[in-house]
Image (tube, rainbow, N blue to C red; front, side, top):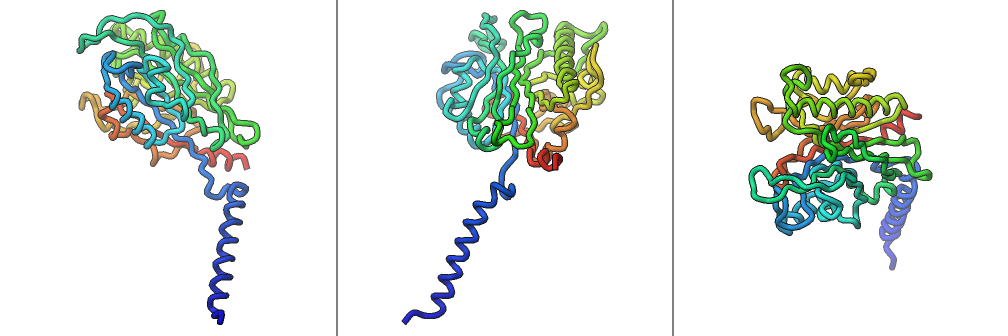
Length: 329
């Protein structure tokens, strides 16, 4: 004989299944449980070479595998990278099956030997690795722009900035606005010194020229009302009190106007300072004021788990794009 309790529990089970199914159907429409976060990382990967045992940071095959595994676990959607030799080197840690890679077109040249090892110094290129599923998940696709060659400074083959725009895909983009992104690697040797005046050395004067170029790029975006992010190795401790470079970036440089900038982890000391006397970071993620409302501060950090892979720690930050959509309603 069929027990009446069985009928009750069967009906409850079927009703529960129906409710779950309806929630799954409803979720994409209402925005329930939809992940609209964009995770960005900036990482100088320290002389990442295309071949094993080459360059100033020679690595074995296992080292590349470890970096690739770390990046997969870290889960960034967009990585602004520096010090990568070429496309093949980038693909060794950013598999072509998972990432679109946009790397500097800076021409190859020869360099003197490394400072501390008897090996040839290789090219150092900037770029972006963008997850291929970004369009499906967030409705954004990377569109390459011409490199910002003027960042080379006085050296004809100095480092160029790589410029992409994350543009909304027509059907999926919704209210999202294009996001202009620049990966940079500025001149070293002037982390906190004066960049102008009689005390400014050659490295600092070169950095000053790059800052003027960067200020021009920022002003162009601001005049057009465009959201922008600059990420990478600034080689400058922008968090020191009244830093000259930071003030110049905000003031617009020689011919610009003031632009209110924000910076990930503003004023926070670096977890692995090279010199405790000057404990601030030289890798930064800088963006316009409008994006500050999208930044998730509690998910912004330097990842100390990566300290065996490079002499720089990757900087992560998260932008909640759902907040932008909410502002439009």
